[in-house]
Image (cartoon, rainbow, N blue to C red; front, side):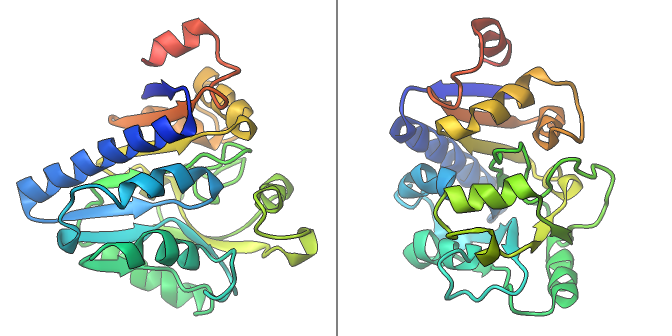
Length: 250
């Protein structure tokens, strides 16, 4: 794992977007296409603002995304499908976007996505880290051994509170308690992983991720096992790290 710390979220957004674009362009140059996996949430705003500006032949890019609430309509402002349509899909000319529809049957959705994922590897995965150090919606303790591509998970209390804190819901009663989520094992199949993690609310998760041994209680520690994973932090999210830890991952 490599760590890159920017002073601001704007610098982080530009640096991570340029990195992602370079990997996408390399894949297109080498194989004629690229497959990408995208995460959502407030922490990804700086990335998407810059990513859509990148010089990429989007017509050769196929997109998947990590998770979606079970039962949610794409018209709901908290829908991750809606998030990606508004901030990415509708702004670039993609070859194809495999968006998760929360209103369809979860088992059928998972079967279809699994078939598509098994066709070819994902070249670049954008994997956020939650306040509880989850990756996708794999809250602690995460199951690192589940070999399915996606599964239905029940969200824990801290995860639900993060969604409220980010402004997607007013209270717990409004939240969706289950989601279709990519599994950790499937995330690790991405050829390259970029993790964009700004903001003070992520400082504890970053600290635990970089200072803990591999453990399901800190799901993001699994990313350290990946051969090509880069974590982008701003000064706020890196604020709990000492210089020795930072130097270890630079």
